[in-house]
Length: 333
Image (cartoon, rainbow, N blue to C red; front, top):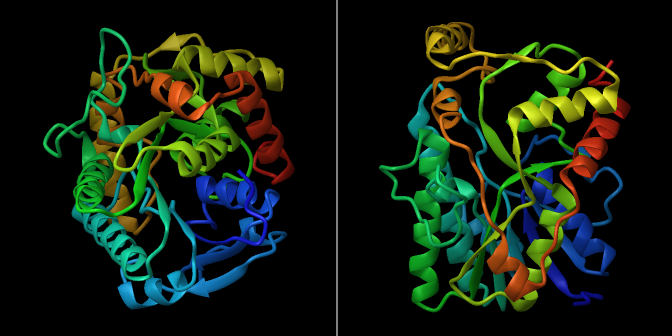
């Protein structure tokens, strides 16, 4: 699908996935408008030819101004925090932001919308892999972030049932270039590449290159069915295997010490308490992350492959690209 001169609005383009989506659209000639918060980090926009519209996602009037005249809208932005001093703040932000963007798109008569959800809205399956047939309820979601994405996705589904032309995509665990913040998984890559993860807990992730996720968004716009959700994943990998691959790429010794989760909970509680006391907002070890690690977070992208023509490159390539970018950014010694 070509976008030559087509007006497209993207939210979240200063972030990891949003930046990849914006670049994929620009490569196909889209006339981009990017909705950004005032004072946000613009590193990922430095060499991107686009019109910037400032506004808070929760401000429907500001979003509506940005959406006027747009043919397509990609709502990628989200409050992506695994932990916050007030966990419900994450839920409020993601619900309110999603509602404001969807209402603005509806009022501006946007032709088609792609909403970026997450595999966080699906129930883990210890006996195999989860897919679109395994939706979680808010009560089943572990932690505020996952609960916020479930609440927001259910809201979008209800609006789709009422006629909103929106397709939902559920990325798994993206890795790759331009992870500025970085994301929780990006932090693992950086710490491991710097030799600061001598041990690990037994868990598993579905790793996917962020640029493949971006292409999946464009395919969803072109071929996705309204109201349907599509998992955009890559390969299922144990954390042990992921760390070994990072060690291979960086020439370090792979960690071999597996730590049970239970003894780590007191440390996680202490870590969160310290962050509340000091005002820090990014504890590396949290109670919710330990709870999530109890399940292998494996997912199948079969529906997206069959209906959209989606595909993902090997996770090793994604890790190598991530390490190259983090190294160039000075985050890996």
